[in-house]
Amino acid sequence: MEEYIVSARKYRPATFDTVVGQGSITTTLKNAVKNARLAHAYLFCGPRGVGKTTCARIFAKTINCLNLSDTQDVCGECESCKAFDENRSFNIHELDAASNNSVDDIRQLIEQVQVPPQVGHYSVFIIDEVHMLSSSAFNAFLKTLEEPPSYAIFILATTEKHKILPTIISRCQVFDFNRMTIANVVEQLKYVAQNEGIVADEDGLAVIAQKADGAMRDALSIFDQIVAFSGKNITYKNVVDNLNVLDFDIFFDVTQAIAEHDYLKAMLQFNDVASKGFDALNFLSGLTHHMRNLLVARDAESIRLLDVSEKVAERYVAQATAMQPYDIIKYIEIFSDYELNYKIARDKRQHIEFALLKACMHGDEKKK
Image (tube, rainbow, N blue to C red):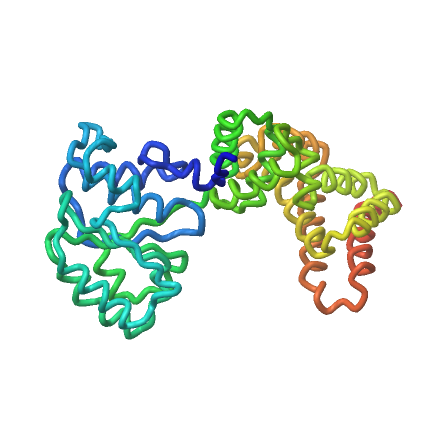
């Protein structure tokens, strides 16, 4: 039986050019290699799953390649590249600070720093989740970080930059990684689906991207989960059913009922949502977000703020143009107030129904 490799590992970028959504950072790192302007310490910050550790590994492999091309691409054939690909490189050292955060762990790393590289040019030390180091470990690391040997380069990665000591940050070149956009993630998922011979509906992939919340690794994990559920054909319905998420149709339908002042229809639609086990607060916050999207969809300039697929964006524009901006703002105000008071409401379901009723009754006073 052929060994199965999860997509997050199988499609992990191996070169700077294949890193998704971090163009400015990869260009800067490539230029640093090209111009031989390497810092001795880097700090990679950003949300989970956006490529911090991946870029650190690619950078480490690149600066140690013995036959680097003019475009700063690794050869993949030299001893340094082969050692890296086979996970036997003695030039690249990784430390997970989440589980190795004591002074003794850092002292052991400092001892490794004293050993020059046997193959390649640099010894690279990648410390993941560096914010988890204890205060004493940080202090023990400071001197080495400030005055390392010429062959040592440190790459620190963190999801919580605010927890890093200012004295550490001041000694590093800081790179802030972007959260992936829906478009970035969908394009990568399309590429993976095509390579795997999977037919995938773009709206379904957009739901996966939205669920991943800007993390490519999470998106690929969810993608594998959907493939296990639906096989070689990924549809929008399969994705929504498997992930148990509130889809766009629900919010478009409820908003249409509100715009028509049909409170009975709106309440019945909410009943369907509740009967499927969805969290009522998620429904309320989703409705508030939907109204926000309608507001920005009214203008050609602000429509780019919609982080959705092109097909869904067209639906937002159609529904937004049929409504008055004042009404949309009023709905946002109503749902925001009810969302704020949700926790103190005794009857949560009735609380949501009152919010829908108030929204549906908005504007009726003009008719009297």
